[in-house]
Image (cartoon, rainbow over the protein chains, first blue to last red):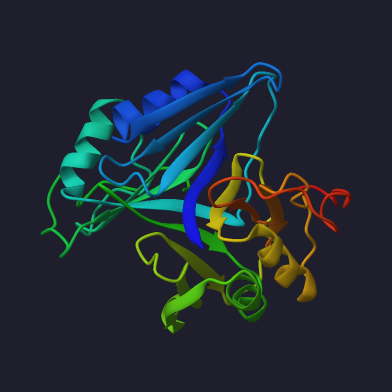
Length: 139
Length: 139
């Protein structure tokens, strides 16, 4: 038994690829259009971590996906949580839970999937602008 | 950047551990009670695949978690999809989408997290009781 992926549904494939790849830093591994089912699948993963993927399902016919609390988040370890959050911030992503503790941050995808970012190894020393940045919304 | 886990919230920790471990076949790696936050975390993974975990969050104060369509499912590859589905069935789990094609099945956790099971390698030849088993509910 082997973990393969987490599937999330996306309402705008381009916006989601922009978020997960250009902003968050995942890599698109493959994409498949299925015209008979009117959907497109895209498989993403952290560079070098192709064993644990995220599958984006884009249904061509719009639907309101909503969100539930039974699913919590997807978590990734990053080498420098401040650099990652700065990159996301510079690209217009709201840091819902800034890494005030030098250890943990949360952002959300365009379809409100929570993404947890965790500093690899020890927490970094508290630093501005993060240390005094308030929470925004929920995550 | 490295994938760590998917977090799901559970309303009954024992029922969820029974589902994910005793029935589905994941292994509990660690558990942490946090009385000051009134929650318990349990980390699970497929045996031998500790790099991709599932984090169960059990909040001690009950809440209705609901479900959304933005999160789709968690997917695992299995060596024998018929044997896996038979074990789940024998333990009382509804096979929402039976592996009629010898390749793919879906079940749901006690909190309605969809789990996709995929046959490793080539699909198995169609076989009863799966080939003629109808879908049950949604997944």
